[in-house]
Image (cartoon, rainbow, N blue to C red; front, top):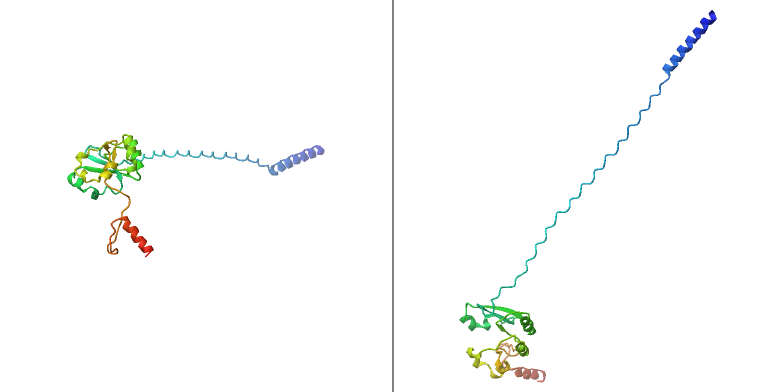
Length: 210
């Protein structure tokens, strides 16, 4: 009887002790599942680069218009001439007698331009090439003969020079200047004013061979 009591008593102690041990054993705290790694914030798509504003088409440069010229024979005169002859000092009588007539000039740098301009369709009332182009212009029907009866000063033109402007029996040209060189003299320094190129040559020879 005592043995049974002792057995049950011992068993009771073991159960109690095991309960105490279980209660004192630190319970493994369940490791919290790591917080789900947040998906990286979606990188915003770069803002669409705005297409550059359409560049306005550059304004078309206005073509420079040539100065208006009177039509030949209509309210004015168109001259195809050398620079310098546009000065009114070369045509004072015409300017005085016809103040309302507009005289417009197109300039030359060489006589060949007279041929090329007329050939391209340029229209002029009067042209002023050198004598080496006279016949060429006549043969190509670029000029018309002149009615000298309407020129009140025609009798003052040197006959030998006037004859050079006559082609096929018709007067196409009026020579009004001759030669390319002139003599300029300072009267305060030159005692005897030369009257011709021969005077210059003679003087030069005397200077070189006194």
